[in-house]
Image (tube, rainbow, N blue to C red; front, side, top):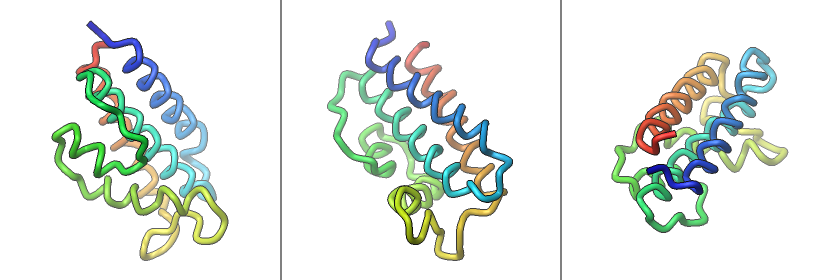
Length: 126
C-alpha cells in the first residue's frame, strides 16, 4: 500500500518536472532546468525512503539519498549535486566546470529526472 507521505513527495517531484516542461526550450534557463531536475530527483529519493519507512534526512545531496536507498551513484547525480547550490544564488548560476549547462545537458538532466520519477512512481505504487 502506498504511503501517503511518499505520495506527497512524489507529487512535489512531479511539480518540478512540470516546471521543467514549461522552460526546457529556453536557452537562458538551462541552469533552472538543472535546479528543478535536482529537486525532482531529491523528492523522488525521499519518497522511496518514506515508502520504506526509513528516516528522511534534511539533506539536498542526491548522492547521500541514493546511498540511503541503496542505489548506484550515476555521474549525472554528481553533476546535479554540484549545480544545486550555484543555481539558486547569483554569481556562478549553476555552472558546470566548463560553463552553464547546455541545452543538451539540460534535456539530459530532465530525461534523467523523469526516468527516476517514473521508476519511483512504480515502486511507491501511485
